Length: 368
Image (tube, rainbow, N blue to C red; front, side, top):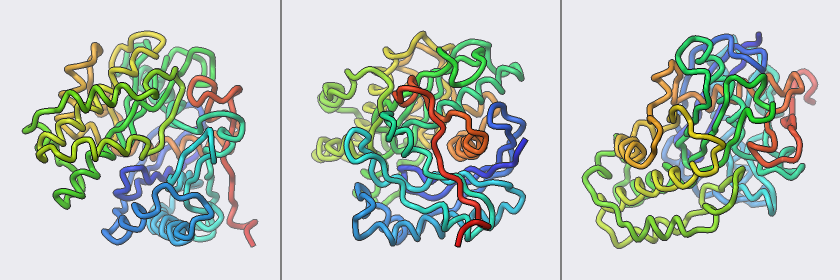
């Protein structure tokens, strides 16, 4: 077992998560402590200003330095970590076009923290014809296998629904021999999640989020906006499939004329409707839907999901997991898989033709 530190800065752009996990790259031996480094207002503005940028854009070097420095600040508070899984900051994702771009260089981070850094997890999958996302499903399989082994889940397929900036769902069967085994995992991005709601709150009310979903709960959703979203061709594409954070950028203009509460309620209804639309692509009905990411703290979203989904909906804390740190833990687990040459994605998670081990390894002692 290796003590790995996973680090994640997601599409919500609120800060950097870091979490320790002990693993051999297949099974979970234990979970360690975690930490968070928030982005300041100026830092957040820099990141928001660079969304959609590719590596040749003028803003990218400054963003990369910000990402590397913020991650190094946090990583140095975890001296017990033997290796670091560094996702970087996604600025653009167009797997059928220019590819995928995560700002931040693992060489620079390895130099700063003096430990091996595994990074650039998505590029090889895209190069081989995959979507490059989502990458967490194999880890969701490991979590289900761990929870089933402790009697916290039935030995049956379950779904993990991650609600970050974009939503993604993983259908996993913990009785499979490995996450890359046939029938073990199916995953895809469901649609917009926290990103449009957070953007609405920031632009209208200068708040980071709708805390607890209080504003949305006081409003009424506009069914025409929801219906228009569901008419998007993305929802008719079979899984696996993935989204860029701003692929549904038209949502905010669509709610522009609505009062604040109704606009927030409409964006919440969009989240639930897009998840419900995605369930038709699952191989079988899940025993339960386990919600992770920031969206699980929004009571309006959780209530809306419970209203439209047939399966029980519950936060991952119900089975002993940390929904705030699951993605960070995932990249620690994936880092160990990369070190061992094990697949981190497969045909039914990213659409890549064959299971692929992506990622790059930077050792501080070999960097000039």
